[in-house]
Image (cartoon, rainbow, N blue to C red; front, side):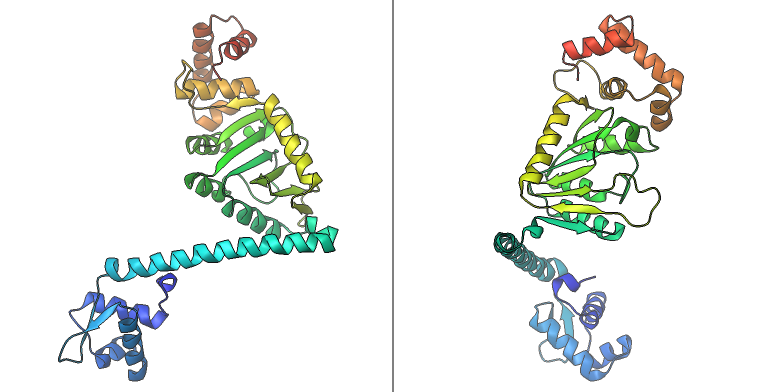
Length: 319
């Protein structure tokens, strides 16, 4: 558990024993941990060198230094080292790609041929994102479900922007509306469209993943492309922006909207074309409750039909 702070298994066990006691001698440490005396002395010497323990003057006894004092500083230094290493990797990667592309055009597109590899690439893409991730999400997952995409939530929490365009059929899948609401609460900008031509994800405008076979038909293998800066990636970014502009916003809050979160979310889903029954099932309310809330929205808009409600919401900028 403390390997991130540079401790071996024996050193961590020794440190934990020191914390639980008023002081430990090498022989006692060896007996409790079931290790050789030489190993116990080596572990204690390592803790001394790392500032995690100190010797009691005039005795062959060692006591622990407080964890918040000893470990916090070590972890801080480790984090700085990791940050510097990450920057070095990014610089080396940029240099590698710049030179390799001149040598070999195939470096622009890398083919992925397994679900495991695709899942790992999607994880890395989001973990390494720094500014914004955009995504087209079609119905029927390929590598993972929306609930399994915990990397998005982590990225949102550290300040990465997300713009996600969902296919309507996907919003009707079990659990999607609750999962979508969680993402929106963390800052995701979401929109919906009746159909999407492809599924894809692009991070920071520099790296994209595009499944090349949209419907795998239950096959265990698939084919996807990892796309680096190129005319193809520029075309995919333009495709996203074009679809995004024409899509329906899905919101929980809007500063200038007169609707509360529940009614705004309901109106978003209604305008996006999600059926009443699907909304009721996923939000765990009765269909009658959904219809009653829609009637309330119609009354608030002075609309006689749902089409008039949608027109009023667009005119008054409710969404």
